[in-house]
Length: 212
Image 1 (spheres, rainbow, N blue to C red):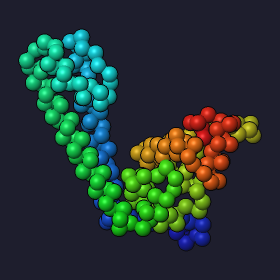
Image 2 (tube, rainbow, N blue to C red; image 1 turned 90 degrees about the vertical axis):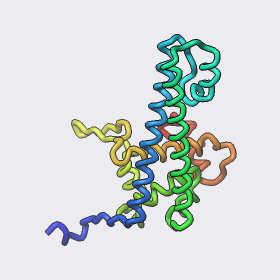
Image 3 (cartoon, helix red, strand yellow; image 1 turned 90 degrees about the horizontal axis):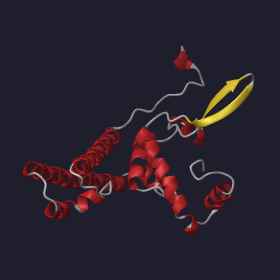
Image 4 (cartoon, one colour; image 1 turned 45 degrees about the horizontal axis):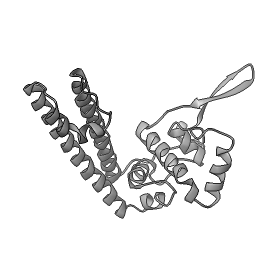
């Protein structure tokens, strides 16, 4: 009975290509998490022996020098070398997946149109394309924003409504990429022109950049 209602919305099934692209993105995110975990492990092991290095990829770049300058147990030195090798393997795998995702856009008209949006790169475009399909399931842009958790939550009491922080519903990875795209656009705002750039400048005069 519900399916016969005119207002009923239907979700378009994903194609095999879209499912494959989503799988590539999931594996890429998993490898990125492993890369961060490996870096943190190396940093933590060195810190236990009183060797303090900057967090992030900086610890990888200086690892060879650290092993040469400091006397640490041989078993730990071998372990750090293994972790370093594993880190380089992860970096290589991530680069290969990103290359495949970038190449997939060449045969994806939707992804190519999405890339015309300022701040959007190939990784975000390919994920958006695999998520959106033809986009007809959304009646307006706000509906899409709501599906990714980028609209404020609403709390109502006593007939008064209050807007809270974003709902954070939907695909966490997609939401993170969209936020990165927005921040990338704002970082290059001085070189941007057009109505969108003007609107962003106007909003930045009123609100914090995270809200904009």
